[in-house]
Length: 116
Length: 114
Image 1 (cartoon, each protein chain N blue to C red):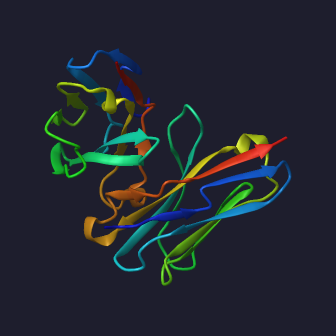
Image 2: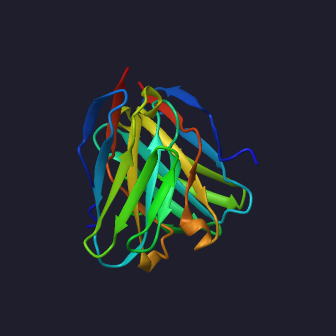
Image 3: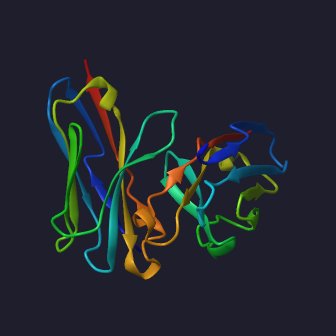
């Protein structure tokens, strides 16, 4: 298995533009997580899905952020409009069925977002 | 608010030193405690997942212990090497989510000087 795949790896955009980050989880995993890494707050959970259904989006900072998981092999995190304070590394992670390996999470390589 | 705290925040040791750091978590509602290793410019990778009070896990020179009654875990590195330099994260999984959602600590940043 190729592991969790994220694209793009780097994104530089201007304030006000729409940004879409993409994630393909490990095949067979039914949990998908979106995290943001910042210097101030460390690794912060934004939202997670179980069987393509959003379970907890309480970490999504504001309405400019939205996430979807249309099928078991694809998820997007969208920021519209983007702001400089959104600059961070965004990680996607997936884990197997509840209890499998006690929910060890496998992380993608991350997307480094810079908003100018 | 679920607090997972790690100490120290950062640590500098010399090659060959042994070191350890601490993760503290709520002792109630426990499901699992994870340790992840996070190298600069890479993504976190799981080291250990522990579920039972008194668990001890070992991988090479790295080992971890778990005390669920008092809510702490220790990570030990014996004979540190420069390649051990990384941030070590612990994460708490609670029973009410069957451990599916993890709350991460802020990590201990380890630097091993040659």
